[in-house]
Image 1 (tube, rainbow, N blue to C red):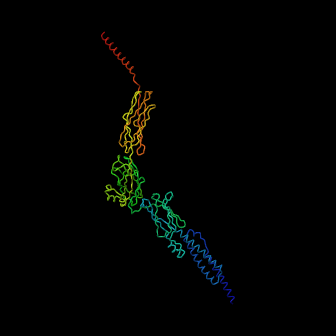
Image 2: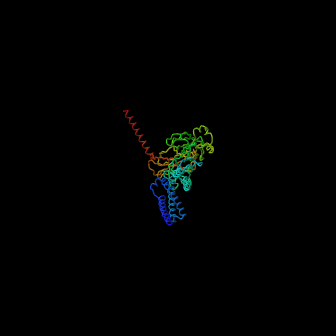
Length: 502
């Protein structure tokens, strides 16, 4: 009886093991569904159910092994199934988490630093926000899910590019170690190239990459126009005009009107603003919609002569101000005050510091009363020229050079004038002597004058002297001819008288 009962128990146990093994394979076996790669959330749900089934089966197998009802090999098989299901579940969970990671730029603001550099402030945000939905959809609330930190995107790298995909930011690439959902990070970049629109390139997570072309915002709370000039310091000759290019960039509200003003510039200097494209004069301007940058120019004309306010070779520093119209009404006495940079900065307005250096330059004028001379073969040409400095700086080493006709001799007194002050005149004597065998005709001599002004060459206008050599007069022949004519006339008179008496 006991033997029959033992045999019955063995048969029932064998059937139970077979059923358990089949159920374990059915529940914990890895079934691949090609749609799991396309619908990863559903694939994660399938992997989670398989993982839970494998874990329950493994727990049952451990109890049976403890009671001595199964072998070690059967327990190892159940543990292997459980491990496979766990790995599959973890892979599916990671795939969903990485797929749902999403980093975006919530705001990109351009501003000017205290040192005048252009900077960009980026607000980088983790827009994933799917962990709560995953837990609710999949009923996931285990330690594994929490350890993977689904609300955190790790290792976010951000850089700014131009249209040619060149990095134009300093630092070249910024790193955010952890970007949590609902906690945006602020990155600050120095723009190496002044642009109004940039490409934000981001690499994060397991290598995901995004590139966003963004138009940089301006801080609407700052009612200010930033002014820059590439030619902020210029030299100009007295009596000439210097033109300063101005780039005006709005950091404030669209549609507001701004005034252009110049301070600390002597009244002897004429100045006006103009539009470089139309040459129209400007005193006020405004920015239209979607236009944040404009160009203008400032022309400054120096007087013809230096004075107490405009000294030669002494720089004149002044400021160009861009003032909101409503604020300009409160600053009615701009020109009557000598402004310092600290005072201007306190006004919270856009400005740029410019400099003009008055330079003088000598101008050599050559005057000659007569440039045509008629002489005989045995005579010489003697003439005077006057050298006048009509410029605004002293002339040094004024040299007179003459190219006479072939075989003619020249004498120049003096040949070099050491200096010629502004407005001073000096007379130079020239003598040209023809050779003994000179022929009758016209000859030319060229007068050239050169000098230096502030170590710069100054060349006077060339003058050409025309000299005509005429044939000499034969006195004896002329006398005989005169006597012959007188005798002929006298003879005709005598003959006429005799003829009338008849």
